[in-house]
Amino acid sequence: MTAKTIIVTGASRGLGLAVARDAADLGANVVLFARSAEKLEQEAQAIRDEGGKALAVPGDISLEDDCRRLVEKTVASYGRIDALVNNAGIIEPIAPLAEASIETWRQNLLTNVLGPVMLTQAALPYLRQNRGRVINVSSGASTYAIPGWGAYCTAKGALNQFNRVLSVEEEMVTAVAVRPGVVDTEMQAVIREMGAAGMPESAYQRFVRLRDEGDLPPEAPGGAIAVLALFAPRDWDGEFVAWDEERVQELVRKYATRREG
Ligand SMILES: NC(=O)c1ccc[n+]([C@@H]2O[C@H](COP(=O)([O-])OP(=O)(O)OC[C@H]3O[C@@H](n4cnc5c(N)ncnc54)[C@H](OP(=O)(O)O)[C@@H]3O)[C@@H](O)[C@H]2O)c1
Image 1 (cartoon, rainbow, N blue to C red):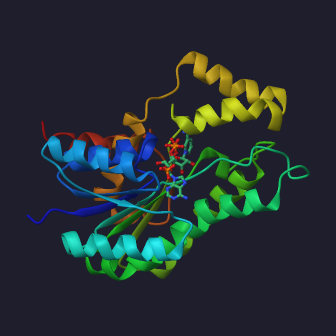
Image 2 (image 1 turned 135 degrees about the vertical axis):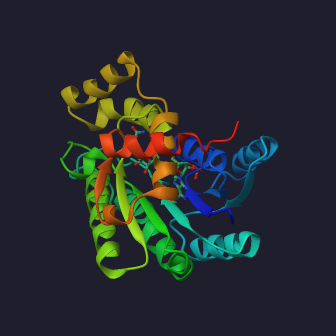
């Protein structure tokens, strides 16, 4: 059987890296994308050292040329695209609207919304050919408001809507938005570092408490997202799912045996 090819953005660390590793374990050709070129190449090499297929393409999701180049390099290397995981994201600015600079809002929306839009558009012709999947990594913060997280909440809400739009426009592509839970990554470290100044004390303390209680390691939701990207059923198209809900975990268990090693 021909191996599937998956693009994972924000794969230099955190959740995206966990998705990339797991997709490689599941036998996919993995294309890792993020700005930190050296780290990205190290992680791609580590996957190859384990016997997987991986290519590092450094770039910035907020730049249209970089999105197009990512698609071109993927197709030049592997000849196809079966799945796209729109995972790269930033939390900043952490500040109330009254105090935040519009430039930080612009960068947030460019990274969290327009980046996925630009990359998906560039990849669509190839995704259609293979009845491919787009997984939009969203957040609980897309469904409720956290004071001080205006740009992030707005962006993730828009990403959920983009996911629905894809599902009604693209018959040959399955789009699923996913909520990964609170995951122990650099993003949580940024929240703890900047949240004291930019959020109300009670909201900030919730994230400190979650860390103290032991945040979720990225491998668990990362594994679920890799399985969704490669195998999500067609009738989940347009949905917003939680990584740990029963039907997602059932899918994860179904494909667990395919993991190598
Ligand atoms: N951690 C959580 O609790 C949590 C909860 C809900 C949702 N999420 C979502 O999960 C996703 C991954 O977050 P994470 O927690 O793994 O965060 P993270 O550790 O900060 O990783 C973010 C990734 O995105 C990349 N990135 C950021 N800006 C980029 C840009 N302009 N172009 C290309 N790549 C860029 C970063 O790499 P470079 O810096 O090398 O570019 C990094 O690989 C995000 O969409 C986030 O909103 C996370």
